[in-house]
Image 1 (tube, rainbow, N blue to C red):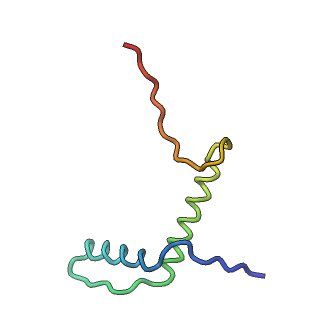
Image 2 (cartoon, rainbow, N blue to C red; image 1 turned 180 degrees about the horizontal axis):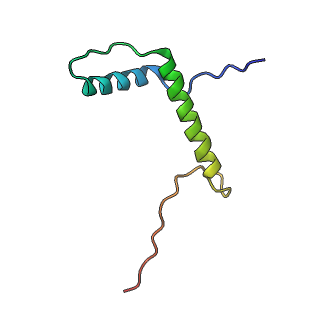
Length: 76
């Protein structure tokens, strides 16, 4: 049995950003389409980053948070 995993990225917004970036990169070429495999590739990258983030998160508390660098106050 295969499990269908829908994409977690927004295809329309990804397409807009990809085409804008491509236009900035290649001024003389007009890119108009994005291959379906690109969305699957980006979705896989995002899922992997989410998995890494959750695995690195400390086990205390109930909220997923980005760790901020805590600076020790230096005495003058």
